[in-house]
Length: 117
Picture 1: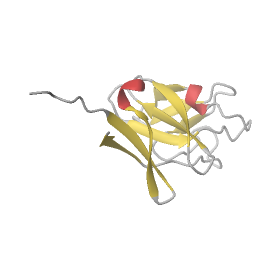
Picture 2: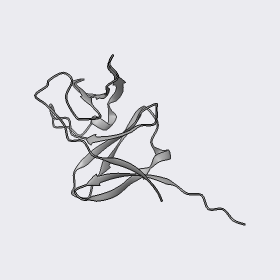
Picture 3: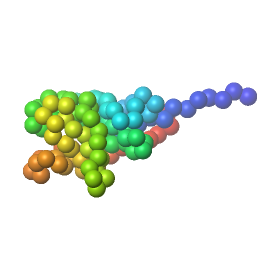
């Protein structure tokens, strides 16, 4: 009997279609990756240390640079998980995209799911 290894893929909801963006085992807890979506936009996908997945826009709204995937993940005292931009250090809530340092700014958030490949 031969067993076939299955891979778990991370998928993002892009428009009305789920799009496979990377294998789960390529995403290191505490780090992010940048992915290109079918509409040409970029997303930053994160896996926190408790294995929760998040996806937000990769574009830093303060600088216009596509760098949020390189930001550091942290959490607030009340448990909100955020990514801090590597440029100007603004923090964005990974669950809802709200900037924790300027309430007038929010980045897009993408729905994430796991699927067997």
